[in-house]
Image (tube, rainbow, N blue to C red; front, side, top):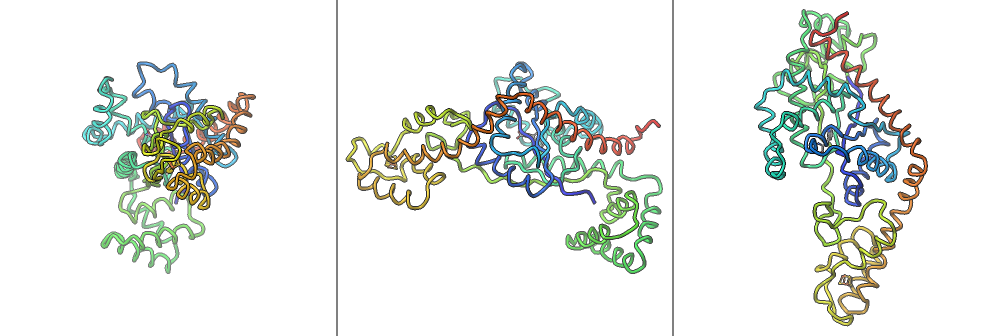
Length: 400
Ligand code: TRP
Ligand code: SF4
C-alpha cells in the first residue's frame, strides 16, 4: 500500500488575508505535524485564466510563499514547491489527456460556472477545459490520498478519483495478471491466503468496506513480499488491476467563518480584507473605520451587537469575559464603539506580530526563500519521477 500523504495547492493570488489564515493555512499547519505534506503554488493553473497577463504571477508566487511561511507552514515539516518547477506534472497531464473523455471535462460543474463568472474573459481554451485534469495530475503524481480543499474543489477531487480508476483499469493489467496475482496469494501462506480469499469475496460480492480494510492490513503485515506482488494483491481485491495511481479523497476544509470589515465573509472581491502582514497603522485604521450598529448614532445611544460587524470579530479574537463586557456595554451605551474596537485591534495585532517577524526574515534574505523552494522542488521531483517511471511503463513507453 502507498503511504499516507497530503497534498494541496493554491493559485498565486498575491498577498493572502486573514480569511486564508483562519480558513486554509491553520489547517495546513495542523496537518503538517500529522502527515507527510506537500504544498505547492499552482502557477500553471493561474495561467489558465491569466494567459493574457502573466507577468504578475511570479511575484505573486513569492509573496504567497512568504505568507505561508509567515503563518507557520514549516519547511522542515512540509515540502513546499512550485508546480511549473516540476515539469513531470505536465507530462502526466499529457499522458492522462489521452484517456480522458471530453465529456467528463465538459461536465465538471466549475467549467461552465467559471466561464459564466468570468464572462469578460475568453475561457473557451484548451488549457481552461483541462484545468481539472491538470489538477488530477498534480494529485496523482504524488499518490496523495488526502487533499485538503474547500467545498468548491470537491468536484475536482472526484474527477481525479475517476481518472485514477480509469487509468488503473486501462493500464494496470500486466500480461498474465490473473496468474501472477494467484501466485502472490499463495505466497501469503495458507492461513492468510484463505483469509485473503474470503475478504476478497466479501468485498467483491457485498462491497464490504471493512473487508477491504482488513485485507489491506493483511497485505501490509505480510513478510517477504515483493513490491510488485503487494500491488498485485491490492489490485486483485478490487478487480481493477494493479493500482498504479492512488484514488485521492478530499479532506474538506471547513468554510472560513472569518468575517470581513463589513460583516460579509472576508474576500478580496468584496474589498473587505486585512492582509496577513498588513502594517499596524493600516489595521488600526481599518478597524476604527468599520461600520457598527447603525442605531448607535451618538455615544449614548444603546446598540445591539447582533447588528454589528465588529461583534463578529469579537467572536474570533475575544475571550468570554471581553464579550460579556461588549454585550453589556453596547446595550447600555456604557462603552463607545471605539472602546469596543480596541480589543479587536489588539487581538489582530497580537496574531500578526509573529507572522510579520517571520516574513521579515525572508524579506531580508531572499536567498533563504529561494533555497527553501529549490529544496522543495527537488524533493517533489524525486517523488514525481518515481510515479512517472511506473506510468510510462504501464503505457508502453519505457524504451529500455
Ligand atoms: N484548483 C485549486 C484551487 O483553485 C488549486 C489546485 C491546483 C489544487 N492543483 C491542486 C488544490 C491540487 C489541491 C490539489 O483552489
Ligand atoms: Fe458594535 Fe461594539 Fe459599537 Fe456595539 S459597542 S455597536 S458591538 S462596535
